[in-house]
Length: 199
Image (cartoon, rainbow, N blue to C red; front, top):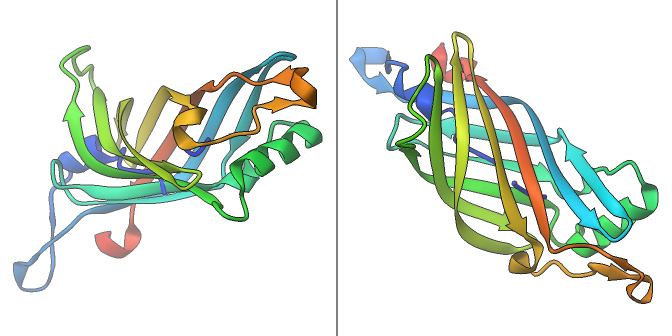
């Protein structure tokens, strides 16, 4: 699904990055860009479960916590389940010509009280807006952030109700094929410092 210009998972890292000094000592806002992504969902149907995956995503994060802002989005039509017929049904249900992307915009990041941070790993809750199939909803997404010397690795998993995003077409072949409205969404994102803002 469009767990979609997805988002500020570099927040924990950016908080630890000092602002660079620009001309006349004017602080510059640190920025990070999405280097790689694997976005996937697991669906459950009457004929068994299946997984749809895409790596076609982009994203940017700007600023320090708690004022960071950013987005991540992905192209819906690139979600593949390795079944041509099912992929056509997915694109039809998602109306990809009308709603080609799914997107997450970050509004706030909260450090989770538990489990506590362990080394370079910290649990956070990402508050923002998830937009799928033209429907924007306020969400809170639990995530794990791993800070590395050259990147920030963000992982999250959350349930998603397709009916909340007005996605239909879950029943096919006169009811013989039925897909459950609940799916599990996962995102594995790696952000790196933007060379433009770091130079």
